[in-house]
Length: 156
Image (cartoon, rainbow, N blue to C red):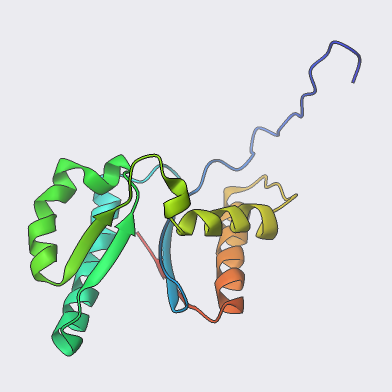
């Protein structure tokens, strides 16, 4: 680049758009995730949590042990639509625990997202959304398979 000019890399018009990932990770056991081509809404989050509540209920009936999901304070996690379900989920053995605001170091899944970005996807760029999605799925499957986790993808 010439002195005084800002470095700029042109992207093709068909460059891949954003992909959002929502993950539920139980260290040393499993990783569940969903991918969408936009930001997650309360509706999508609710679909996933309803599935988690059904699993928590089965686990609670079999063992008497509750399931606790630790999450950050994202707006979809605490929306009014979601809060309406907390009491029912609690009765089903599913409990929500929120980490302190602005404390990503307490949210262990944040480290996994960093490793996915910087270890599994480093230096790659995508011109097609399908290629980006495929790379994300492969990165998630590979990373957690290496750790001996079962991996499940929620299809929304």
